[in-house]
Picture (cartoon, rainbow, N blue to C red):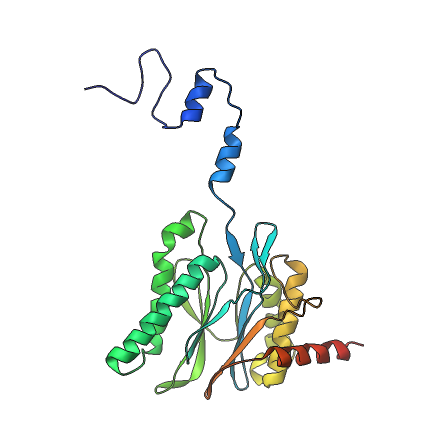
Length: 272
């Protein structure tokens, strides 16, 4: 039986790399190996930043609109806050390709269960379903591509009408958030501000009304954009505003662009 790992008197041939074989035999290679390795894996697209916190009427969940690939802005109108059903929202941070597929899978699963069982999936089951998808994505995460670290806001109209807020780690573990949840590259700045607000400001987020909560979300994402180039914040030139959705006992509602523009204009006017 002939061994294909080495050839007597010649170089090893077990790598399967033809360009490397040419280099070992002294043949000039015009395309450097470094260039081939760098181009083998394209720069992945990332989506950040998302945040959520309770306010007086329920839970607010928001995300900026920027998607980047390395130092390139791929898109400035990405939808990172996705409705899974009328009582469940997911905010994605990480790879949009993987996150969007997770969202579509959950949307289909929730709808199928509701139609086949004539009832909605329980809140605990929804939380675990997202955790399982993140865990199943572990091989991609360990390779450094396709990682997703989302935030989930949900409620059970029959058994738990008050919305709850959950955050996850990259391995799929889920945690119940009490004060707030943030994720993405711009989250450190938002986290610091929210910690100060809830501990020292005398007006924690849970005591703020809807208008104040929406204004705070715009401020947080705008501040995050100042320290993180991957966060879009509020684009004043193009009038691109973050996505903001509200989940309360009455249900799920999106804040319109007109309302966001009015809230941000009021904030800027107050600084003059």
